[in-house]
Length: 180
Length: 149
Image 1 (tube, each protein chain N blue to C red):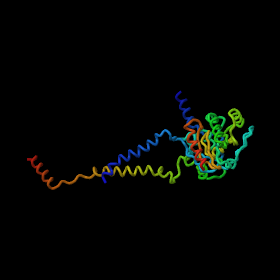
Image 2: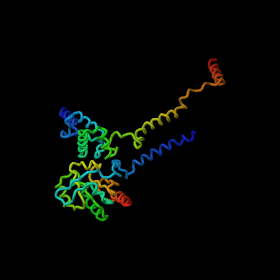
Image 3: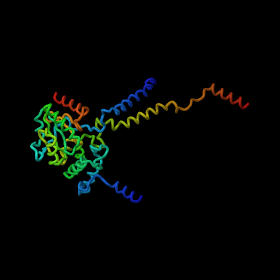
Image 4: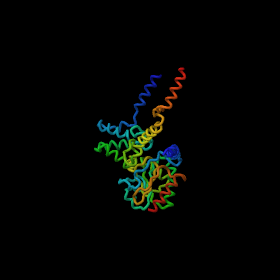
């Protein structure tokens, strides 16, 4: 019995060390918010179109038509969105994905100028002027990109899809989504 | 100069993120909205409640909470609405359920083990010294006698 107690300090070091090692892992982002909406359908909401552009707005049923769809939350005032726009357009074209846009807390004219300047890869764009749809979708900022399988959210990516580190987990999730 | 600085500091601490156009006319509802907002985490600046956060999304959430209260929601309905969208992460006081159980009872478990361990460690040292055997008693007596002699 006494012998077992002799291993207690070792056990404590292993437990504490494991916890601290977990905390030091550079790939862990402590500010990452676990998404409550993964596995759920998109909230029922009608997103109106932007005035001055051909794209229609959308409702969740439009997205549910597609086996695989992306919804990208963007705004003309958001600098990372600008950086992400090219690579994301390319990705959607290359993979043949239905890409929808959620224009978050933006002025219509600014958003239209932005799309005319950078190109418009979106099938449909919903305009969320008051940020209400953003809350319904549980977003914490822009840009964010959702992967949806037949209208159900399977993955949420926070931040711009630029660079290997950000793109890899997203592409992995996309690959998994294809299997469904 | 110092007095001016003190006044500035006093005024600064009175500056809230809640903007005048958000405040409800009904003081009871407004107080409930403030109490809820103080317990809701801002998802941008994560250690700040939305009540004192200046981010746009915090403002949206404050307005939304007030709208729901005006529409007749109970406090719990408002919290449920937020948790459905953001998870219990958004609450500063997480609910007690299977996932958060370690969080709630963990500190008490550690305290329990600490007390248990301390008792175990000090058990031997705190025991009162044994009485001398009759042989030792006799020896002691003999030594004392020798001293006195």
